[in-house]
Image (cartoon, rainbow, N blue to C red):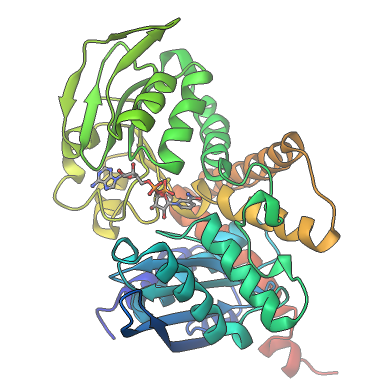
Length: 429
Ligand code: NAD
């Protein structure tokens, strides 16, 4: 277990613990997952054969509320990975003050190898297997890598069939027609945009003079690139799994999104009325994109993109982690020594889980909010928590990552201490 992902994840707590004085109960309670479930899911395949898949659900902590976290369908899913992701969710929910603990789920498979019928049977089978472990007051799943609103819809439907009544608040990230929330698709990008536009002016960085490179042009990266473009930032480079494009004069992001939807690849095209013309741009690799001389770098694709191998060559003074874990721990130290600000995933990409929380609230109240309402509430939350993380980092002279963990630990610790501490029980009465 020493080299497991989970042991690495939990070691990340060592630094923030140096800067806060917390009751010993806090560390003890956060050392282990509250409950872990491993299940086998038999699925009848389209060719008549039977295949059994391994699935997991880990509820890491419920000290601040029911567990909350996505479900991942991926060939690399293991109990160790799911436990680490559930651990991170605990801190992410605490950083943005959601009344949730942390959880995560996953099934080990390559969803691209399954037909839609097989995928539906698997999704329903996974819920059959974990139904006693989840619920709107216990642990609420959501989408993650390779799961989407359709899959969440099947899962909520299956959970409701088991319960014999409709339980929309059991799963978030559902299609709108099944109780999903307006603004959920854009939530991660919008939340990240709120963090960026709160922090950069504190360093005298304003949109018109700020160049940006975005790695990953998917749900989070492409929408964020467009929000930044609309706000007047100069987005000079974007990339997807096939490579990237760079134009120092800036890219027209809406037309690139349109082209990407048509051709499934990123190309720099300006559209003027109905006439489109190709803009002069350079083709670059994902590695080159990370090392560009830009003001802001946004990794929005995968984990471990900035490592010991390339950290010394990163030029951007600001990195906003939209992906989960794009900066490896060893690279973090190098970047910190070089004075590069890394704004951590547990704050930057928390917009997604925040609007999942809004969805849960709407489902339970049976009242649905306008998109402007959702976006307004999200903005207020993201800006407020960003201000606190910034203040903590200045006051204690610590990195943004350490400050975000300190902020989350304070909240977790308060909830743990509210149930009694050593000094409470031993105090003379
Ligand atoms: P997505 O699948 O929609 O997009 C991922 C993008 O990354 C795609 O454009 C893909 O082509 C690109 N990509 C894949 N491999 C790449 C590589 N080697 N180099 C560059 N680009 C590559 O996924 P998403 O929902 O946008 O999520 C992206 C990241 O953000 C993930 O780490 C995810 O965990 C994190 N995140 C997403 C959400 C959300 O609500 N979407 C919430 C929290 C965190």
